[in-house]
Image (tube, rainbow, N blue to C red; front, side):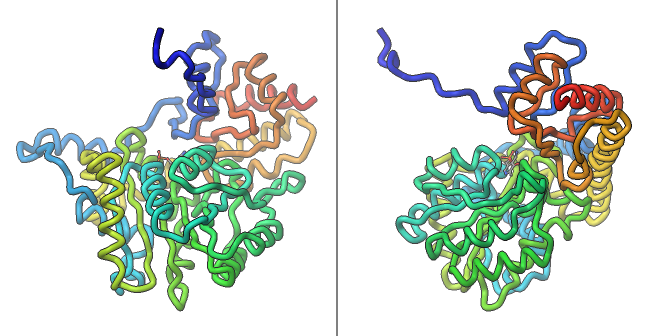
Length: 404
Ligand code: PMP
């Protein structure tokens, strides 16, 4: 018998498990609104034009090599990705208070910072995460040694941000807690604080001496503007006196480099004097976890970020992607009105980012899958990026049937 005979089978990942079910479904009507990857209106994965061209150049370039990267990643990638998040002239960058480590997309960056904080931030700290949040937060932090606790974030009845609940819970959290914030396009709810509310969150965080950790997975994807989608981070990073915080940055969505695992972790310190030691410890974590980050995707991103013409082209492509998502919101909202689906569906229009948090119940979601082959997570989240024009009416009619 096996030494693993008593290993219990872990539950499937709710999002990736859904993909497997979808793949196995033979129905020609099936629609995958589960996973958060962009699809074109022809329902195909999208490689950005600028990425494709750079890859062709790299393939033709005889100087392209596949050496190891430094543990902390490529210097130019690190510098330019920090510029994208904070703005090139951010005081924290000018004052050399930011430590940047290239890491494995958003998830790897979160895991590295979680391990670092578990070792070097206050012992016994809890990590406050929004309720609801991206499901993997609940895996990443406890596995790195940081217990999580939820703060109120979403008001189901009003289908919007529960700002008062959020602020109350952050006020009541133990002094110096780590507070996970979605930089923009909150996943799964699509509800973000406005700038005045962010200012309020900043004030509580400061008063309670919490440590903000911004998860930035959708910069540019929410509004089409890199600046606007980074506004909350920049507000916090520019606070005086300086606030210590971290940002985990992913290039999966905004550059369509999901599988290449390109991202960075930025730790903003109160003073430049500590950055050397912080960097040295982040490298220790990365060295033991995966040794050094992958190079291919980071090389592509670096070329885009350093060349103004390529950058402008990228920005246009991001606007095309976010524009298609917004168009799907309008079309779905209109179809739900036209077919007379009961209820108020205004939130489909106003939510931000890739997802719509429909408010459909778990049993309604299951009904949609079994009766209509429409796949979505059981919390009622649908990926607007996975919806295509030819499926809008089918989805709206199925939703009407599910809620009736
Ligand atoms: N944070 C949030 C909120 C996300 O939605 C995602 C992607 N689904 C990630 C982090 C990480 O994605 P990746 O590791 O692919 O960059």
